Image 1 (cartoon, helix red, strand yellow):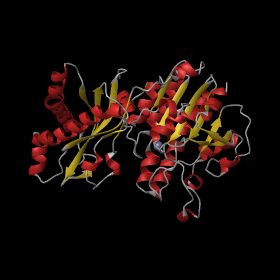
Image 2 (cartoon, rainbow, N blue to C red):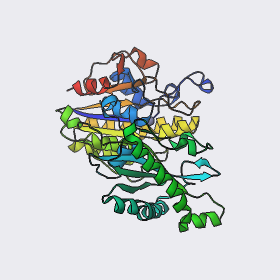
Image 3 (tube, rainbow, N blue to C red):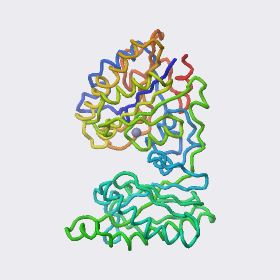
Image 4 (cartoon, rainbow, N blue to C red):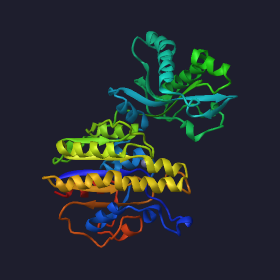
Length: 412
Ligand SMILES: [Zn+2]
């Protein structure tokens, strides 16, 4: 049996007054998901362990069957994997935003809409002016900046200590940056905290001198005038899915989101690029469906992640979020389902979100999410449609974290 998980990021929601008290999954026209729920078996899943924030990286790692307490290392290592940087065991990898500061405050976490091509120049410049002198002094490659996408980059500290507290810059708009500098959690991490704070302060001297920022200043536009490292960690000690589930010989992850690709990489999955996959409602659903269908031909496990519902939820856009659910249903799940019917080999399919991103709250909520599991010949339970309420009476009941993957992979 092959297995495919189709994940609609943040798709689950809460009852909405404007929809007559229905949730978006209850209200949206999604005949495919309803058919699969009716023919298959349903349940609910707790995707966020206690003590963890309801982040996509947390929930998706749990859905893939990993114990967050053992493998969670923050965003830095996931982004490293996503941009193709293979971490050494003594690397500390941090997400490194390039942000905009003014009058002692964090104005934006994104450097005033910095584009990747410009960011590449700034990152090269930081390596030359900031990292190189430190590396020459220490006689090793102690500090390295690596270009990612737009304002999201990577900072690697060789021999860095991860027991530090950093402030995610998007959580602190219009706050003074100085009190948010890196703090050591244990005495051994003080040197790392000092080094990072030194890098932040020096970046604030250097970056405004770069021609990119000089041009921005001349136009009165926001400069990308400080680095801001956060969410650091070591290389996750994750066993691959192939090591954990003997039935998986090879697998693929399809996602436009760096963090999800990073999780996939450490899980031993191939990362497939899909042209026009944007992470938004205009994403190339058909292209993703086609990529999934192709992956099913040669792999045993496929993880398709679609970000669009989450973004619509963050934007508080009810109509758009409804559309993303309907697009997922008709433009992604339907063609995959129709292909599975034609395949000689049996395929087990699951549909679920990672967490709620309620349109009226615009943030992630870590409540249980509804899931459905279907394959040819499965004995159905009583659930007739796929949504938050219907799945309460599903035969899987309420599963916790890794239990989903264990149950899913039991189906052979
Ligand atoms: Zn998510």
